[in-house]
Image (cartoon, rainbow, N blue to C red; front, side, top):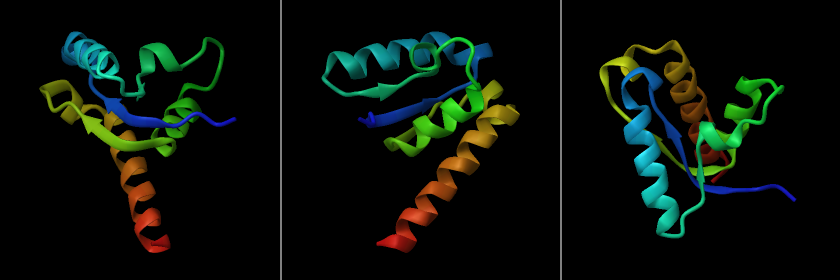
Length: 93
């Protein structure tokens, strides 16, 4: 059975890891199912595939804006992938 999430959290680890962790904790305490890299990427797997899968299975994309995240090529990949997912969803509607 596939697992789906209320939201995916995208952030830059260098300056937002603490905030992202607190956000994840607060959202899950309130009953939401959140995809969070620190909990949802098993060891020894292709992390990019896991991230893409998390974005696909999330209803919302939360991007934490901070100096590192806006300059991160990894965060940019997540944004682009999420945007493409949304565009496909709109075409199918």
